[in-house]
Amino acid sequence: MKSKAQMDTRTPNIEGTVRPQSAYARRWRQRYATRLLISDLVVLIGVVYLTQILWFGPGNAAVVVPEESRITDVSYWLLSAVLVAGWAWMLGLIDSRDFRVIGSGITEYARVTDASFRFFGGVAIIAFLFKIDVARGYLLISLPLGIVALLIERWAWRRWLIHKRKHGAYSARVLLVGPKASTSQLSKAMTRDHSAGLHIVGACIPGGKRVASHLPGSEIDVVGGVDDVQAALAATGADTVVITSAEELPPDKVKQISWGLEAGRQHLVLAPSIVDIAGPRLHTRPVAGLPLIHVETPKFTRGQRVVKRTMDLSLSIVGGIIISPVLLVLALMVKLTSPGPVLFRQARVGRRGREFPMLKFRSMVENAEDLLPSLMDQRDAGNDVMFKMMNDPRVTRVGRFMRRYSLDELPQVFNVLQGNMSLVGPRPPLRQEVEQYADHVHRRFLMKPGITGAWQVGGRSSLSWEDTVRLDLSYIENWTLLSDVIILFKTVKVALSPGDTAA
Image (cartoon, rainbow, N blue to C red):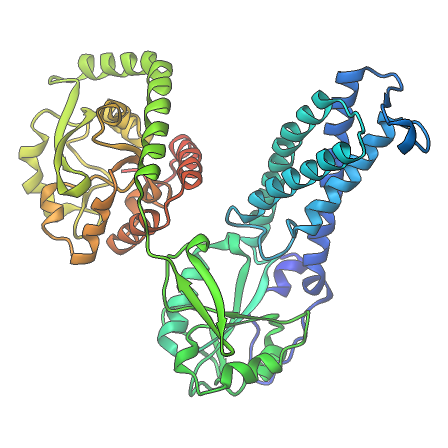
């Protein structure tokens, strides 16, 4: 039996059927924002008052205020209440609870952090101008502790939200409008990512009719042509119109569609033809009434490389020391369970197309390379460029365990120390794979290959070749230090719970 929220998000039968958007669907944004506000307040009350009690004790300590500025004595209990209210207000003022940033991406977390620093910066300025002596330790502890607590709270809410969105709840109801090819392509990409909260309920394509037809390769109903958007909105209960290719629509059609939308309740989204470009590289600039989108060219400065290398070295040294007992145990397991060397060295292609010997724990029989040609026609995973086999007979029993949890890749930490690899980067390919690359795929060699990367946390063996390339190139062209940190955290999760993606 489906819940009311799930029933409300099903794609309707379009012909002659008009089902208005439910009250629940109309108000989910406000409800979720209210829940965030309440939980923010609970977290901040706990952090600020706990810090006060730890710093001053349970007594009634007072803030030191000069005589000329004093109206009455200010207790820290009152100051803590002001800090909590002001902090929560700033989180709302900077739109950290806006429906456009919740569910996916790092914008929500960045805004929480930014709002916190802005608020405490304002508190410091006010204290300085009015010569109010607020205990520095009280503020210095509250700020980082509060940020960490808020981020954990927002992360927990995001897990809950993504779970709901997998069943269609707490999502925008999307009507796609545009040519069949671009609409089909965008629908596949949006369907893969539930966290964005975009639930497709119909599509309007040129020449489309309100009959029981579907977009190619999907179960999304074609509910009409590009002139039927208003009727389609009423029939599907959609609250968001996504234009998949504005340049292929008739002149002024996008403007006409936007005029027909209800302000504040229905939204218009334009999907540019360029994909896999992160927000920091996109800038909108209005020129003569035209919203021009500037896309910055990817840059890899010496400073960026120094920062990335510094992180690689520091984490590799610390991590290598921590996992050294694990490396020793795995080495003994490999040595005692099958004949052959403990480490497997294989030539891989790295930055600028240079080959280097990549290290791994040996997970296959000693003559695995000689047996490969006889298995080429039996592959059941991977793709046309990379060989993968879910039940490869060359893999040893210990090797199968190590490969499932990516333990065989741990010796690559020494490749990182040598400078051949990075902790995070594109997948290190074999020379015979590189020989099959299309021209644009060689952009993977702009950065050092990584022990992990977007390809590993994005699906590993289950990915097609096109998706593997897309993830690697998107990572390279939009690299930030924060993206490396996020991928490292996701790698731990994937390694501990690999599911069916490991081979």
